[in-house]
Image 1 (cartoon, one colour):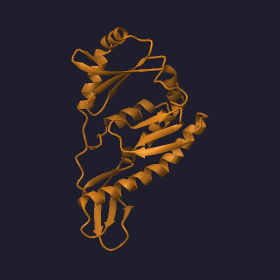
Image 2 (cartoon, rainbow, N blue to C red; image 1 turned 180 degrees about the horizontal axis):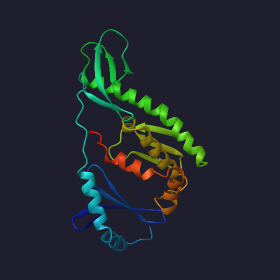
Image 3 (cartoon, rainbow, N blue to C red; image 1 turned 90 degrees about the vertical axis):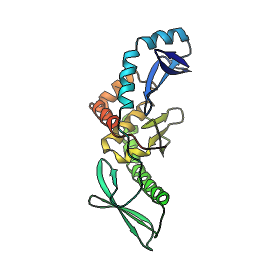
Image 4 (tube, one colour; image 1 turned 180 degrees about the vertical axis):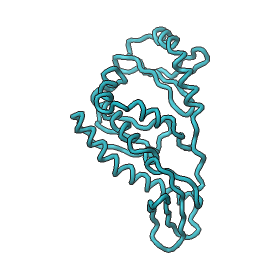
Amino acid sequence: MLSIGGIEIDVVFKDIKNVHLSVYPPTGRVRISAPRRMTLENIRLFVIGKIGWIRRHQSKITGQAREMPREYLERESHYVWGHRYLLAIREDNAKPAVTLGNRQLLLRMPKDASADLREVMLLEWYRAELRERAAVVLAKWAKCLDVRLSHFYIQRMKTKWGSSNPARRTVRLNLELAKFSPECLDYVALHEIAHFVEPNHSDRFRAVLDQNMPGWRIVRDRLNEGPLPAIS
């Protein structure tokens, strides 16, 4: 752990060639992944040169809007693939189900179902939606970059839109992606698959993104400017 100019920085040493600096939502936490050959003094000098960049990103992240906590009530706003829908709740003896209609997200539940049960139902529906679309998108990019994807996982993530493990050939995607426009999923899928080719955020990595999705920076900024998930 380093503290420079009032900024707390987590330092992790890895078997990598280049230093990598990240600022994570929602608190603006700073982390550096550094080659094992680097000394703490080398890292300190590197950070001093990046102080302005770090502060700008922290200010942007901490000022980012957050979703209001959900109560899963009638006519509450929910988002699916970038579009806003109003929640409609039908309590009857029919089998619990979620149906996406014309600007309406219909949730059928047993009578007196709790908010927790409504949340579980909707999250599982979002998971199924994302899994179906992600399978196609990830397969597309794996084929395009000529790499093998063994498996992918969907989970709720507080600070990342996705992650990858090139050694195991696996990818993890944030469940919240099902709420954003499809091009956001496309970008995150490409980003994680590209790490199979280049583990670090190097010039080579950015070149892979540029070649396959020339507008990826616009999509990335749109995704990062959207409301952060209200996950406790």
